[in-house]
Length: 296
Length: 118
Image (cartoon, rainbow over all chains, first blue to last red; front, side, top):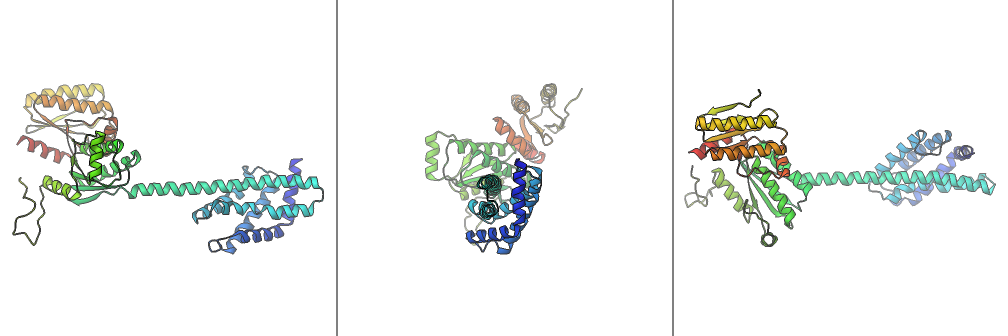
């Protein structure tokens, strides 16, 4: 009996396809607040294709939108919803695509079927179907948005951990933002890779951009220093602000195993001295040089 | 029986670990190495682990032990060529090989030992 009813709805849609499409488009365009983003022609083409696919799928008599005969409809919805998600449409705007189809279909149902009971039954079937499709659209929309978010997180992670070569044998790792275990892992990996690639023997970790240093962050820092040491590179921690120095002492964090400097410039000078290099001011070359020549 | 070769360069002993370490092999290496340090009057030991891709807590402890034994026999130990992934694993395991000197490659390790001996 159910099969019969569904085919009735299918037949009705098929019969009035052109009218329903026209009314549906009108409803969609009326609600469309951002006409600049999706062109009218595009909506028209998508809607037409979608309605065709729905009619096709209903021919098989199945109302289960998860079944194989609805694959084309699902693909169309998925494509539409991911396109709209990446264009910055809201969830409501995206789901409205399917939900606004209710009005014209219901109108046709009322018009064609006189028996009130049958109308109610058919409306129920149509509601179930369209709600299911609407939910599918919303779900897919959310999935696309989540993918965007996780991709941005990944990119942020990569962007925020640059390792720069300051000099022969000297690397700098300017850290910006809080260090959590995930980031520490990335920082450690990129630092160690760079040590292997450049053969550097000193790495300066600059924490000027780290807002707070608690015991956890300190532990992560020490881990990075220990890993670099295992690779044969010494670490200097620089950019420790006065408040952070106070916090570190109050928390009882022991940084005595690492060389610490207040500024990157100081750390760089220490690194230069250790690698046996020195920098002289060209104009004052004949005067006393700021960095004493290294002893061999 | 399988053995890890120990090469001598002047007063430095060179150990290159290229096979998977297991208990027996590690004990054998400890025996061989301590014997060679005494026999050759070595003052430096260089352990190259650049071909080790996987390190567990056992190997970590073994390296620490070898370094400690060598230092008792008045020879400095330098571990060279550790892979980044291995370094991260050891740190995560809490084995920071304190007391062991490290260098990026054999060349730098040799320089470190010669500098210390001079």
